[in-house]
Length: 103
Image (cartoon, rainbow, N blue to C red):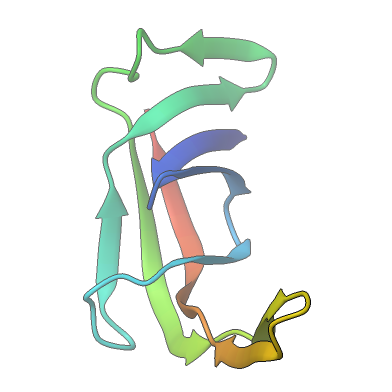
């Protein structure tokens, strides 16, 4: 059984027991979070596709940790002007463990 959920403007295919990194959620570590935006649920060959969401479907997950991704560097350069600028960015994320799929 698996489901396709939407959170943080992205879509994820999840099944029970998966550990997924999603966009940062405002939930403490160890707490439970419920994803209501379920787009598709597949259970033993039975496919339920929402228009756009599946009615009554939920995905429950437990927050494993809050973290930051690896640093990426942004380098801006203008030719013939001696202008160079380097900056970095670390995207925050929330790691969740899927505990159950309903629906």
